[in-house]
Structures are given as C-alpha cells and as structure tokens.
Length: 478
Image 1 (cartoon, rainbow, N blue to C red):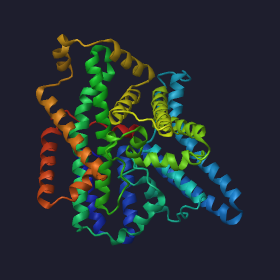
Image 2 (cartoon, rainbow, N blue to C red):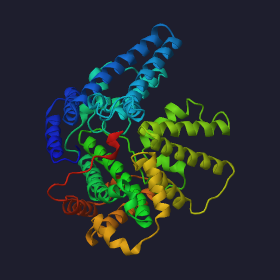
Image 3 (tube, one colour):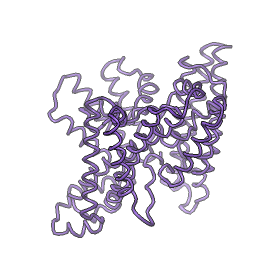
Image 4 (cartoon, rainbow, N blue to C red):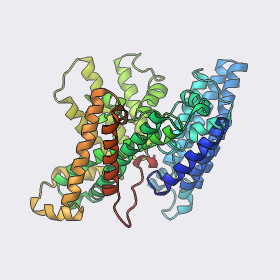
C-alpha cells in the first residue's frame, strides 16, 4: 500500500485537509483516515482493529478502577486476565490455521474456515502495543486513557499499524495532545520528512524489490542452482530484508513527520554490530526494547544469576521467533539468536576476545535468516544441504544468470545500491545517528544534490515497467 501509486494521492489529500482543520479535531481526523487506510487493505482487518481497540480501551479502565477501588491485587488479576486475552487472540490468529493444516484437522479444501482465520494486517504490532499499555496502567507507568479517539489512534495510526514501530502509549499520547500547535510550514520538519521518505523508497524500490527478484527463485528451488548462487542468495536476502524493513520504517517516519508526529527509530546500522547483543540494540529496536521491558525484566533479567540470565534470554528469543510466525522454521530462527546471545553472554562473562567479531556477527545473522526466509523447516534444511553439497558449477553460470535475469545492468545496480547502503550505514554507525538525520544536518547544496540523486535513481531503477508491482513489505505478514 505504501508503495502503490495511490498512496501519494492519499497522503497529499490527508495532509492538506489535516492542516485546514482546527487542532482539536486533528486526532479524530487522523483516526478516520487511518481506518480508511486499513479498510482499503482489508475490511476484515479494520473490523478486528476496531474490536481490539474497544476491548483494550475498556480493559485499561477496568484495570485502573481495580487499583483505585479495591487494591493492587485485584488490579493485578484484571491485568493478567486482560493481557492473557490479548495473547490468546494473537496466538489463535497466528497458530490455529497452521495447526489445523499441519495436523490435518480440516481438509485442505476448507478455504472458508481458513480465510476467516487469516491474520489481520498489523495485528502483531498493535496487539503488543495494547499489551504494553495494559501492563503500564497496572505498573502506574502511564495514566489510563479516557479519550477513545486518541487511544484508537495509538493502536491504529496508519503510518505505523502495518509493521510498527511498536510505540509506547505515554509518549505517543504526549504528541497527540500537542497536534494543535503543529504548523505545515516548518522547513526543518518538512525537509527531514522528505529525507526519510526518499531514503526509505530508495531502500525498498531500488534495492529490496530488485533483490527479491533474485532471492525468491533461489529459495523456491535451491536444487536448480549451485553452492555459489545459494550462498549469494543467503547474503542477498540478508540485505533485502534489511532494506525492506528499514525502508518501511523510514517511509513510516517520513509520513508521520508531515503530520507533526515523531515515531521511534527502528534501525541504526545493525550489520556493523560487534556482537549479537549490539545487533539487537540496532535491529527492530522497538521490538527489542519491548521484549526487554515486558518479558526479559519481568522474568528476572540478569538479577538472579548467570544461569537464570541465559535461560531468560533463550525464553525471550523463542517468544520472538513465535511472534514472527507459526512453524518450526521461526522457532529455529529464534532459537539460533538465543544461542548466539547466550554465547555472547559467556564471552562477556569470561572476557573472551573474538577476532573479526563484526564479520562473525554478520555471517551468524545471515545464516539464521535462511530459516526466516524459507517456507518451512524442511525447506530451510534443504537450502542448507544444497548450499553445502552442490558445489560450484562454473560451466552453468550463464544459464543460472539467464534464469535469474541477472544482466550486467542489473548486477551493476545491485552492486552500486549495496555499496551506497553500506557506505551510508558506516557513516551512521560512526556518528551514532540515523542516516536521514545526518543528511538533514548537511548544507543546502549537498542535501539537495542527494535529494536529486535519490529521485533520479528511484525513477530510473525503481520502476520496472508494465506488469511490475512492488513486493509486499516482508513484515506485513507478521
């Protein structure tokens, strides 16, 4: 949706009407356009979003009144019941269709049953936001929201409900309360918005979607290629998923800035991390901090000894894998990251120095992505087996290249695109600031030159002609 030709029209009309309206009704207007946006993707998803908003809104008030009237123990029970209901709803949508098909409880032809259980767009993201809100009310980290419009906007704001970031209600509420003071003609905000949008669309349309055309055939039929191309496929997918998800996050932040709302940064040069712990502080940062605050710390964190810390870490990453999707391949992906993190904890505890730690971290992450990308555990193992056993068949390189439609031009664009991403992330890592923010700090001339370059690259290499449609954002399926 964010990459459709319709979206710029939707955004221009929305921004124009937004700044023509009085400040007091801007939240209500944003909620209306957010629900319209959701409905254009899926009416089913909109219905579920509204029902979840109603349920968790009143659940929050229920928890709050329990604390006020009868004491902390009653409030705690109400919070546990409410959060358990949210987890049950999320688990049902994620796992029931998989279990019904996997264990043959229903015939493969029962499409009507499965269609009603298709996970609504954005459910994983806004449900985690609802859970954090309910927990924060009990913990008295935020006041109960009494305005249903603002709470519904917190869950369903169009710029983030599809794939995050996972915001905290208290910080989001503060911004909604100050929307009346936002003015359209704010040069710094508008320029930063354009920077985020151009960087995001470049990462998505020029790099991620182009890499998808190469990666998908390799993972669909690994036996048809050789080890060299399969290794290349795993590495290219590592870049693809980063450009896809970070590109979405940049687009989301850029869109939101137009309305005067600053969303949480989700990525900051993760592939330059020295270890897996640092990687998770830089990759999907809103999810990482959520799992830390609402799973790892309540389990005891690192306060109950080293062994308990390792167990808690494994639990967190298994939950992380389960959150991303049903199936043993996601569990394997989460389990691998848990093992990586435990090994990292051992390294820190015993002060073991690992040479080439950045390279090791990158290839460890790339290896785990194979399980994330594959359609199932068997597919992932087949990919790994083929990658390790097929060998290099140089004589068939031309046919492989032809099958993957890898012309000299395509290879050149891929190489230059990846080089630009690596260079930008290297600067971002050293400066400890997102690349769009760094571009914004530049003078007018270099900043406008970068804008011009990105626009040219988007129009020349981001459009593939008749019949082409942009790949769905990878994280929309979660």
